[in-house]
Amino acid sequence: MTAARAPGLTRRTALCAVFCGAFGARAQSPADFYRGKKLTLITAASPGGGYDQYARLLARHMPRHIPGEPPISVQNMTGAEGLRASNHIYNAAAQDGTVIGGVSRNNALARFYDFNNAGIQFDARRFHWLGSPQQETGLLIINAKSGVKAIEDIRGRELTVSSTARSSPSSVYARLLNAMYGARLRTIEGYDGSQACLMAVERNETDAHISGGSSAQFRRRFEPWVAAGTARILLQMGMKRDPAYPEIPTALEIMNAPADRQLFEIAFAEQVMGRPFLLGPGVPADRVQILRAAFDATMRDERFLADAARENAEIDPVDGAAINALLDRVYAAPADVAERLRALAK
Image 1 (cartoon, one colour):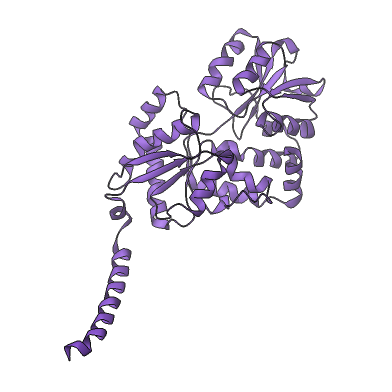
Image 2: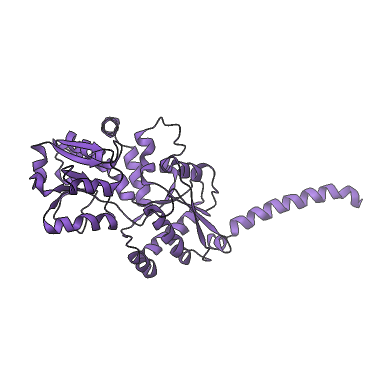
């Protein structure tokens, strides 16, 4: 009889194991989940760059704000202008809250600009964005020898702008200003990085440079020129004014037509995102909440802020919910506005 009951007992034991296991998984709090775990932060950047710097800062300090203080190790995953890392986190990485992504900010709008690109295997709106420790503001820097003294003057004559490539912010922003402000900016492309672009202005090879951002290293190069009066800042390329230049307007502020302002708002979405971090789309909501809270707490952490200051890493954070909301607005732009921006960005 014992042998005859064995199959039934085995089935009941198996069912009990399934239901008990499921109950145990549900009963485990998010805080309990992270105790004893090791987290991985996959950054799309190569070692030594700005994105990598912020990833390693976050990895050092964020564990203190996660229950159980799990360590975070950084893994560099370069390739395809950041798309390799974004695709991996979306499709292949564990979706349990143990993998954090540090991605290129331009990946967030990659499908907006090029929706037929088969290499983009993710929907940026479905990521759970943790936030960014930094927001970017670009600057239109002009050589004083050009004779241009105010932003209105860029309408009256052709000015050359140093740039790395047609797809870089320097060139894209120049085309936007030409189309919507009546500027006459002619980009000279092929310079090897932002420092080389600044050197072109210094050597009088070009009249100006429009930066996509303004890192501490970048500022150290041009700020002496501004102080000496050999260069001027005419315009800021971002959603808000840089505190260092409170009197200089943003491109949004000089646009008269609402449709033109909307185009710049979409183009500047990447500026808001700065150096973004995220989680995969399948991470449970309660773990997303814990990691977002940990990220926000890290941004206020005095030890983190002191460490960032020692490394000259600017901290001007934006939270993850704001980034998700921003992307929803961008992708919901009217078709005619989106098509106009895509045409200008090509």
